Length: 153
Length: 153
DNA sequence: GCTTGACTTAAACCTTACTTTAACTTTTAC
DNA sequence: GTAAAAGTTAAAGTAAGGTTTAAGTCAAGC
Image 1 (tube, rainbow over the protein chains, first blue to last red):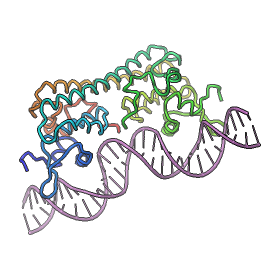
Image 2 (cartoon, rainbow over the protein chains, first blue to last red):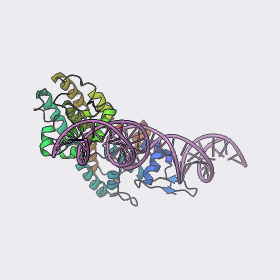
Image 3 (cartoon, chains in turn brown, orange, green, blue):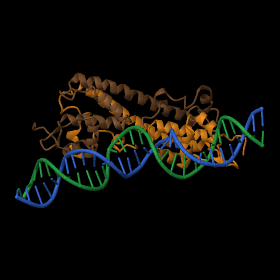
Image 4 (tube, chains in turn yellow, cyan, brown, orange):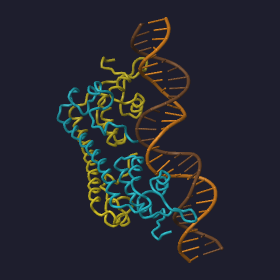
């Protein structure tokens, strides 16, 4: 065991995840750990980055499945290089850009809705999708693509 | 029954929600319906707006509980006035602004991470929270407030 | 007036993302 | 060397947000 080995409770404290979540993530293949002779987990410091990444991703609304895919790009065996992080950051950035774009579109739609005379069912495109929907298929078709997809959860 | 009464399947088609979801939302108090003598649901057109609202909210990641709170501001008994919508839109807008802000902060954090020389564990603030966390309590404390709160799901 | 498609209910089931529990073992500190 | 704190597992439980099923009723068209 290297002297950088971290126990479960240390990782829990420093990452903000509950020990049960750490075990869960390990079962799900998002993180890994070494074991002591007695079978207890010992983590390398690298796990803290992966956990920070997981936290950020979850908080932005990505499913664990998506997070796993992105983390699969990061080597577990060697210290990630700058190129590793750069590749992931770029992937990540696209996803964030999409989501930001979708939120902005929704917000601006609502803004115009405030001023559009919503009393008329026919005029408000943001909150009154049925005419478009009736013509173009089911769902809120006025929304940007990202927001029309089914939710992860 | 007024002649504007919509059946379940009509509302399902025009809103994009499955009939089972409509019944679920009714149980949860997000929408209401009249009944025929035989006990079948008949919806007023107003329900389509509420459903569009629910859809947009869900897709942005709001919990149904939050949606219910916002929808509680909308009268079921009378046609919502411009003031009703305006009040809600403004509430909604704040929420969207917060979420957009959080996403932008995360994205920009990642951007700087690409260029910051992430090889050094000590330098990257976005993906390496442990030092701050160790000092300031558990969790990813470098994140904007919204993203540090527990997830709805 | 009857068939067919749409509708009704309660209850069970599903997925995601974890947490809790129970029974037991390791480590650490004194 | 022993007690307490921390760790282990499998399995069950939880919560949100619905969907599916089963068994039966209503409404519309011919």
